[in-house]
Length: 392
Ligand SMILES: [Zn+2]
Image 1 (cartoon, protein in one colour):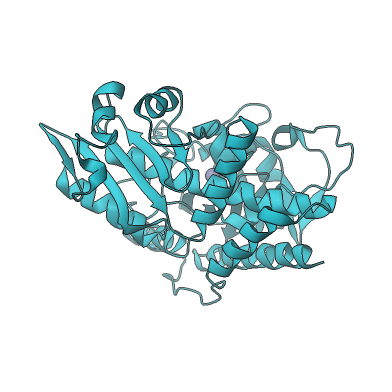
Image 2 (cartoon, protein in one colour):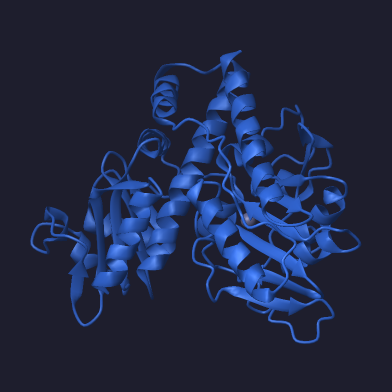
């Protein structure tokens, strides 16, 4: 357990989500252990240790977000306390994973336990974000990371909408300026990924490992989300659902295209979408991430009186683009409005497609250099377009 706690505390810091000195991560084996001692781990004075019993969980993470997340999380949390409504982001990670984000004003044990009985995380403004796992600290890590991502996306989208309404001022503008001042500059250097086409399955696995790690390393996806695939001979190699793109060893499924023996049960939930993108094309590689400004701009629909309002992620029928990249609706999964039906036709003759509120899919004909470059270029383009809109 100590090893796992150290691992996820390290991943949180490496992803820039929290600072190690602001992170308290506890896990229950035979006994309750923490990544470090702190007043927050003291059962006499802190409500955190008691939550293990109250919630029947095996791990707990409480951490103050690092900038650029801290200011926007706190802004949204205070706004939520004022309105009495939870934070309700509209991105896909929230829709499928978190629903909404409850906020409580302080570390009251009953309020924390009550919030966490129906949701995966709770925010205490000025103090931190609390999440948990029932089988592993990995769940607490994933929820925490997803919460910060969703808050970031919602805050920036709210600012854009406020700007469009002519209502961008006061505390929101101050929080925006502060967040922006902490935003690292966009990266423009590209990693050198293994050149394809690949000659053996081993080369495919190695190339996928490398591209997945680079995608996480560049911050183009939370580690737990996104997916990656490569078409080698008649087999589609695809990351498993719920796998971390920076830990793909043993988490890639070979799925023969004839469906003979398909591991597609564990393969990514987006397996069908990937397979259909390859169909009838010379494409070999797909990389899918959730770059933040791409997700924000995918939800920037300025249509007044939108007939699909609130349903844009399912049935937007407006032709929309960011530059040469189409934006399509599409739910996770294979239903009639699933992205397995919307993504493949939109990808014809394109280098990438944005799925509304979800993320970017990019393709390559030989290896992962081309889709990686697309992912980064589109994200930087979306960031530049966003900032230009905010300056008008
Ligand atoms: Zn995704």
